[in-house]
Every structure is written in C-alpha cells, then in structure tokens.
Image (cartoon, rainbow, N blue to C red; front, side):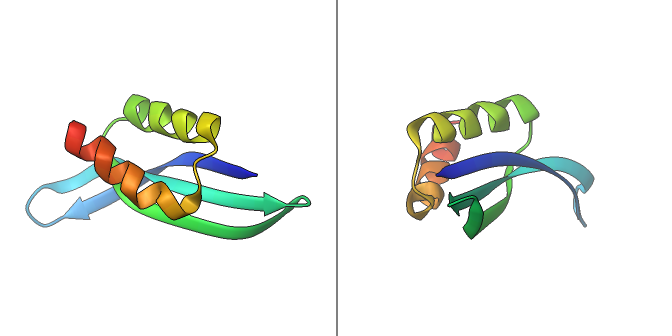
Length: 78
C-alpha cells in the first residue's frame, strides 16, 4: 500500500527570505513495514492544494515511480 502525505516546510531563499512550502512524502508499506519512501520538497505554496494533491494520489494509489511526473503535471497546470 502506498500512502502520501503533505509535509509543511519552513524554507529560506536569499532573494525572497523565509517562506512556507509543502513537500510530498510517499511511503510504500508491505506487511505493516515501510519498505520504500520518496520525498519531493518545496512543491506547493499552500496547504489546500497540497492536501488535494495527496488525497488524489492516495485515492488512485499512484505508484511512487510516477510521483515526479504527477507533480510536474499539476505544477504545469497551475
């Protein structure tokens, strides 16, 4: 089973200063043990968009192999 979570991050850039972003954490579990993880930081700037994205990933049981592509598609559509 694959489970996705939005992870809040406090980040800083020299040109913009500090800001809050949301990354995406994906975990694959088998027999109750996490066997694989992926984390893609700094994807979304608001919690609602991040929450909707991970909910969609969870409902569709998106493979972590396709997470980067799904993020690219969503970000390009914004």
